[in-house]
Image (cartoon, rainbow, N blue to C red):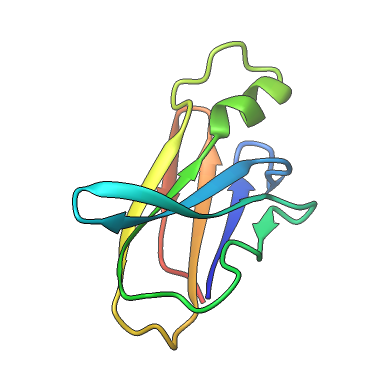
Length: 110
């Protein structure tokens, strides 16, 4: 299972309404395998419908649209892409994003 969570550290709360796309690398191309929008707690729990495969995955966060909703006319980082590897498909992979207008960070959560 792959899940994510977006927190707006500038506002001190969840980032609601952020579109997130999950992709799997196949050879030299990326193929979409899931999509979701953060809920009122900033979480997306439905990125994958079934079992996942080992491989390289990428989450793309549309933070530009979110930041425009928050009143920023121009987003310094209009999207954030996080690429990560999955080896053990039995584990839960939680990839949070901590977001501010001029920076972001991520880590493997639990």
